[in-house]
Length: 346
Image (cartoon, rainbow, N blue to C red; front, side, top):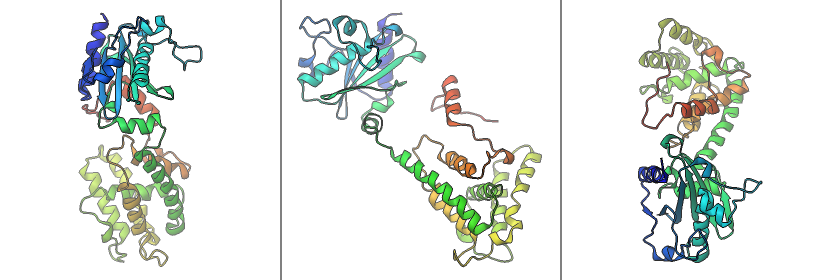
């Protein structure tokens, strides 16, 4: 396969990211005039593709062979910019054209991409941010989704500038709330470390029931708050059809603690309500409704894992095994999972 194959793969990926691009040309005359050949002849030269995304110019240079991806100095941070390196290697050539734009136009934010390979599944894509103050080698990417007009400003703020994303700030806040809840369960519920995850799990499951509301937890002495949460949790377990029946019943039985511990359902003057209502409102307001819908993180899983860590356990006694994030990412990559796929975890 030839470099033309790589060109087609890159063009396809750009199309998939809704990035309008131009092969060896640019509709902006100022950029066209700035392009200088990699060979040092003083004549015009163009990268494989040019594009404008938001306030950024995108420059793409590609090579068929992966071994022609880049040539660095020994520090692995500085690209060699002699004529031979710029001509032969994708990243070096992309940087050459990006520097031409920075030096000779009013465009001062350029992302240069060095790409290599002829296998669509194993294509190498390396972004390099270039500005008047220098350039920054960035982590490799799999596609150009984060560089579309809708996403590129966010990529700039988070990856290039190193600012925390909204979701990251949100996650830190939610994880800190796990510690607060852990202490409240001890202070208001008189619960031991092994009992706290049971109460939190029962409430989270009950909150999944559409007909259940924290307002129904009114400290009634006949049908207690604990009974109401237990019934809602049991209904949810029935609704999601947990199998086998023996395992489901064993899990449900562990949650009877919330019925058998009267202090959880009794009115507490310090709170102005029962501890169970306080815990349910806390989880609903401070955890569930605080989770960003667009977050790629399993925020609820992270919260629960953080909460369990304060109890000195790992959740396995409840049949809950929280797979570490780096393991799920590894197997997602190995299985080449796409956003459109459906995954069964039996």
